[in-house]
Figure 1 (cartoon, rainbow, N blue to C red):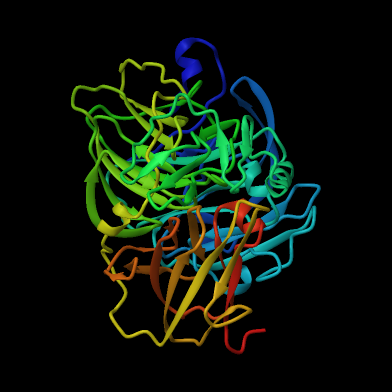
Figure 2 (figure 1 turned 45 degrees about the vertical axis):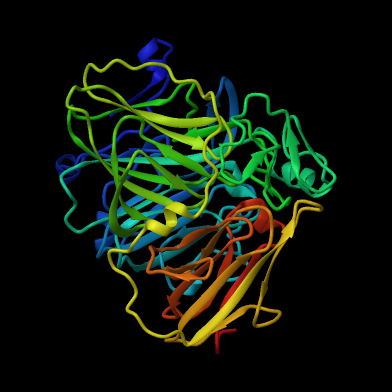
Length: 512
């Protein structure tokens, strides 16, 4: 079970996220996440009945203000889904909005026509309409679901999608879904970016197209070879004189399971127990660093794919990526904050793991210094526990990431020429992602998993995942097997970059 900090301090409020131990799961206890309970495993799917997921609106209290946001909920109000590998993904998606919508099952590899991308795999779902989905779940992992229509994702149209192992470990699972939130309409945000006037409160664009902001509270000069000159949202001047933009949008709040640190969730855990954190970066435009404080964690999976374990207290997580981190809680029974530090800025969100009787201190939503800027140093250390079978590439492509803040124009340019990337069923394909811009881009390929095989031209046998960050001026090589015929989206997962043009498709020969 969980409580909010307001419950602890006597301010009241409804229940929010909770978690689940394996034995409780087997007894049928509900898993709670992102504002209400997760479903138990999709037991009804075996009987042929799909689980209903309804796209709807809901009300949140965010930093003392009421906000109307979207949600993906089952009929009893529980968001998202939890299932077991080997089951069918059997879902009936119902549109309860007054506008069209469509949902993508991020990280799963469904048949092409069930991928949920308007104009590529399906038509938008009209208001009041429903669509059935059914395909086998062949891999366990931490995945998520979100709208792929317009800018709805910014309005929190997202939820966790957890596929557990056939025989889960005896550990408590805690799901953490991160968001960035603005009271402004996302269409207004995008229009401001394209007009070059404002990326958020207190921000302006300089003559070279970089955002600047008052940065008196920032920790300057924290990166080798760079100096901070744009503050929390602005830019960094690299030693060569180029200007790198960190964040282009100043949001009103940063959320962990729909809550700010003004009133975080208190997740009840066992004293000295073992916890598996399933962390999902569902933010539209914000990277984070997960900070475990004094507790050392063991990263065991990225984007739902097992890696050789890596121990640490801080772990970077780009937009749309997921981290599975295993913790052994302190034997002294003290509380453990799990914080998400906003990239290059002092804002933070998080939850608090609270053993019985543990004291909980209030944590401010803004820290004293800026959090780290995400790079490729940690990515370079990751190794897959189940890498792709080595084989030569049948097709090698270069995909240039192009654009700038001036005019807010972003794009992708393939070495194969204009139009979609092409593939033939059964090929091993390698793509060199070359970032020619001064912003980082988290690149996501639908319908496939890929392995990181090069960083800045240096070959390696890296992690298997579905989303990889390509920082400014850097390149990342990925390899995947063309084993899922169709026409698939390939895009930057910074939602505003994608909306402004950074999206293409991977089309199999013979698919129209």
